[in-house]
Length: 253
Image 1 (tube, rainbow, N blue to C red):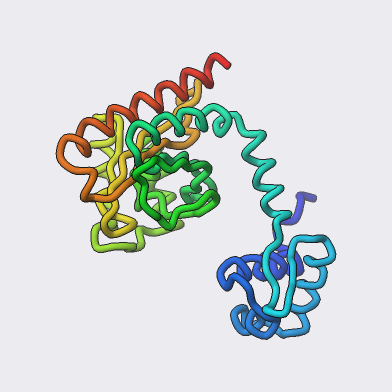
Image 2 (tube, rainbow, N blue to C red):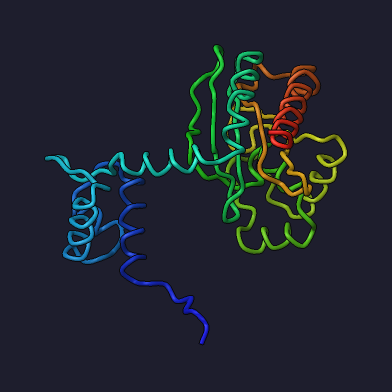
């Protein structure tokens, strides 16, 4: 008899409680229960268990996620060759451009910001390590999609759709495939206010020795500072070079 693929209800509830705390920040039992439409007693039991194992903390304002998640996340990155190899190159390109340098990896059909470095001129963005976004909404995500076979892109669209984030987000399947063709031809992708208004981004894919995508590197910054030749040539060249250095370093480490 094969292994069951049915979800374990208790585990699923625990995960929903954790996700609720991430969305609500600090919250009381009743607020979390209302958010999840789950009995207060059930939420309380899960919170107590999470607190017992030091995944959740509490004070008079309510419950919050604990730093033990940070330890687990740090372990995931510390033991990842791509992160270890890319991090020094991200620092270099952030210093050269003055903007945000990002490393994104694909996971469960989303783009995950796996590392980021801020340059001297970088302004505040909503991105943080671990943030998950729609692949078609960012330069790094589109760079990743450009490396996939057509059938895999079709599966991505079927499962995740092409939801609109800004008025510039690609929401049409034909338009996405046309852009992916352009990305393959020139080697890099761009994002012109497609996830955040006023922000532009340039990204390039990272491929392993088997030509399989590992992730993408990108540079993002304010539209006012990334225009004309800087958007079309200067930053793309730096991003392509950075991607190439990371790939070569991974190959010969």
